[in-house]
Length: 391
Image (cartoon, one colour):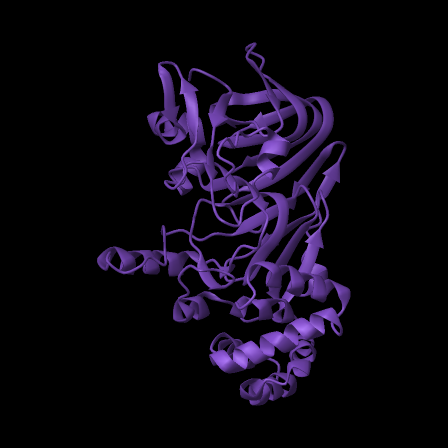
C-alpha cells in the first residue's frame, strides 16, 4: 500500500433546492457560476465518484479500492459488501427536498431488477441497495421525519373540513392503525384538484392564525416554494422538528420524510434510491411509494439520537451494519485504530492526521480523506470538529 491517507476530490451536485452560498461560505467550495449547490458527495456511488491522488496522477476511489480490496476495505467489509458500503455527504438545502421514502434492500433489489428489464420506463430505482441514513446538523436544520401520532393527524386535518377525507379521518380517529393511516394517506395524495385547492387555501389561513408556531413555520416555508403542491399537507401528518447544530437523527428505510432547510452532514448506505410523494416536479409513483412506506407512527421523543460521549468524542449508535459515525471536537493526539475503510471530514477548524510511519495530512473545513483498513493505528489532533465514518 502506497499511503495511509488519501485526500479526496469530491463531486458537487447542483439540484434546484440547493443553496448558492452555504458550501462556498462554510467550506470554501468554489461556485463560479452561482449554481444551487445542494450536496457534496464522498464515496464510490456511480452517480458521484470521489477522486484521489495516486502514484501516477489522479484515479477514482473506486479504482483505488479495486486494486487491493483486502487492504483498502478490510476483511469484514470486503467479505460482506465487496465495496465501500456507505456514502457521506454535506447537504445544503435552501428550499425543501421532496417528501420521500427509501426502500428496504429486498424491495430495491426487486425494483432495480424490474427496471433493468424495462429500461425505457422512467426510473424509480437508481441501484439495488437500501438507504438507511443519519443526519447530523451543522446549522439549525428543519426536517420532517416519520408519521405523527394518529390523534395529532386527526387534530391537524379536522379544521380543514375536506369532504372526501371525512370518513377516512373518522376511521383513523376511531381505529388508529397501519391500515387506517395508509387509507387516509392515499386519499390525501389523490385529492381532486378543486377540493385540494380549497383545502390548501384553508391550510394557509390556519397556518397564519390557528396552528401552533412550529407547525405554522413549516407550512409557510413550504408554501413559499411549492404554493400548490400536495406536499403542503405533509407537516400535518409528519413530525416537524428543527435539529440544532450537533444534534442528529436516524431514518430507517420505509420512513416517509423530507428535509426542509439547513446545512447538515448526511451519511447513508451507498444508494441513491428515492421514491417521492410531493414537493417536487419529478416523477411520483404512488403505487411504488405506498409499497415501500411503513405506516407506523414515529414518536417525537424518539427522533433525536442520543450519542455515547466521552472526552472529545461522540459515538452515534446506528442499527445497521453499513456504517458507523463518530464526531471528534478539540482533541489532541487521540489514538485511533482503523480496521475498515474510513472517510474523515473536517466540519470546522483544522485537523492533523499522523501515522507512525511519518505520513501526515492537514485538513481544513470541507476537506476529507479516505483511510484504508491497512493503515492501522494513527493519531488525530483537531481544533474544531471532525466526523469519522467507517464500517
